[in-house]
Image (cartoon, rainbow, N blue to C red; front, top):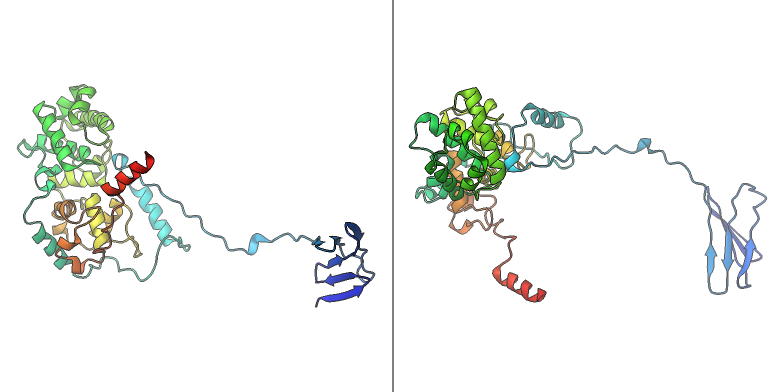
Length: 371
């Protein structure tokens, strides 16, 4: 309990375990020093410089080392940066094993929400009705993917040449709109550069000029030369016939590999998930991270989640269906929810209508301010 003693304008306040000594003097700028109390010779002294208008108190306390062993250890979650689509390559079992080990560990990262997730393989509510509604909206076939998608590349060529054309079109399509990709394929075809032999013999600068302005055209021209050489050396001018072999080609990721397998070899190994399928499935609430209700963050996570419940007969048509839907109605910015017939069944309806792109009026006002 604190004790207060009054003696000749000296106030001693003792608070265990660190005492506080306050000395007051009527003389301005007088320096006073307090002596330790007889009852407690180990008490540290406190010095006060006092005047009529102010009192300065200096307190010295014994510092005790803090024992940090009892503090809970906060797990450090590793932030995995997302690669560019151009460089997205299949990382195989290493990332999958890392993700599974994180999910099976006793420590749950704070970024992951775990609250009664949908059980593995359970279909979303009303998914068939939603899919049928999208089919009705897509029956006109007016989306760019319907006439200029990767699966349309080289559709008049023999099977071997067509497979290579689909592979080239898939490579060029990353971060590139369908009309631009289609134009590049047409220029390569017109110049006789849509076979492994022709591309391997062609100059890289020529390939760059023909595929421009696809995204990352310089890097893609380099990858095309490498792919053509690999196809000639290992597959006699044809393309690999397995997912694993396709993923070893430079610049080829899971989305492209599954598309080539589906179209080129008529062998369905998985769903082709691009940015449109990834976005729309998350908006509809069809996919989530394994063991959680959190949205998927990559197209590969979306593919794995979608394949857990979607019937296999829907794996091939789901890509052009949702891609065209994303190009016409469920657009990345300002989706046309008012024109969508399934808005009553969509949990994201009218929630993503805002755009980060400023209007022309705001742009003009900003320019006027700068001037």
